[in-house]
Length: 47
Image (cartoon, rainbow, N blue to C red; front, side):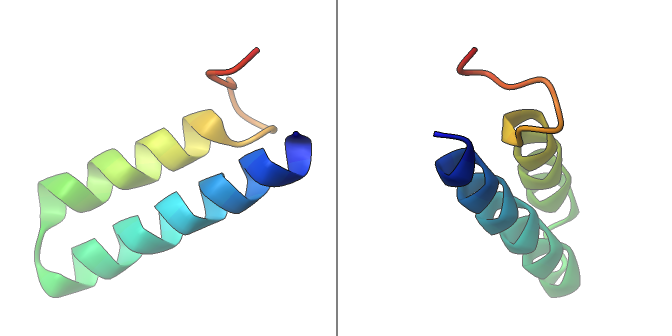
C-alpha cells in the first residue's frame, strides 16, 4: 500500500508542477498540496 501511495503522490506532484509551468497556478498548487498529503511521509488520507 505504501508503494501505491508513493506512486500516487509522485504523479500528483509532477502534475502540479506541469500545471504551474502551463500557467494554471491554482490547480498546480492544489495538486502539489494533495500530493504531499497523500504521500506516506505526509499526513496520509488513507490511514
